[in-house]
Length: 146
Image 1 (tube, rainbow, N blue to C red):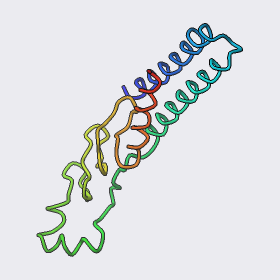
Image 2: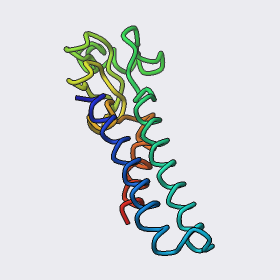
Image 3: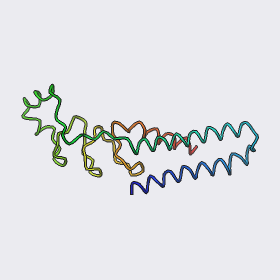
Image 4: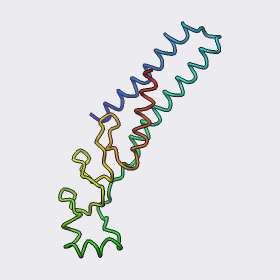
């Protein structure tokens, strides 16, 4: 579903861009009107930024915890005093160390730091490293709809 949703997203953005520029802006303002050219330029820019943010959200690592991760040395002592880090910070699904604010994503099958959700439209989990790009994608898409 993820690649299909990503393809649908790009298709809809490009279709909206071509429809608005060819069937709305040019007939209303004409080809040689400076106002129409400025509006078309900014609409094209917003569409490009939405697609770029979508691609960055798709292909950026969301903050997956490596399988061989271990707690930092300064926290290791504290975890040992509290009964061992395997009891406190251990993911039973990944069978690996789980840092603070990390949660297991059942779709991708790995722990993600600051996991927000899995988004089928970007075919990726939204975590600490791609959260900005996801929010920019949503913002540019909303601006494009206005």
